[in-house]
Length: 115
Image (cartoon, rainbow, N blue to C red; front, side, top):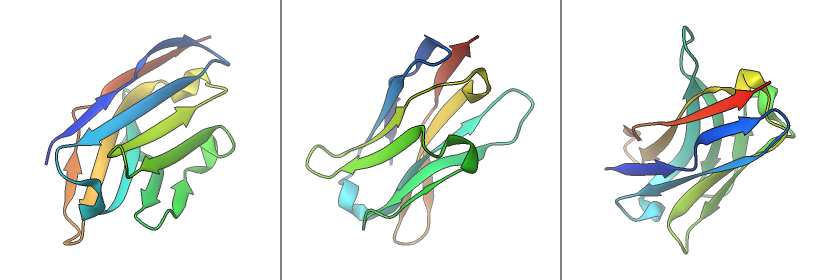
């Protein structure tokens, strides 16, 4: 499975960005999709996930600022990021988990938030 991520870039603190992820297979095949991030020197952490039933989970640090959504018609998963902070700076990775609990990862897209 290939996951094509887009939407990263440089933004000032307080600004917004939207990440988009398009899998190479039909989105209904994945029981869960999500976004993870890894900052320099840190471990990769879960940012937000959404199940095929629409159940979402967020890391505490982004609750109220980020929203994950799943567009089955357009076969994409998006992460709307608002009120961005410098500590949100990281490489963001799209993740997809199939019904066999196998994970696929995108190559990552860099988000840089300047203070």
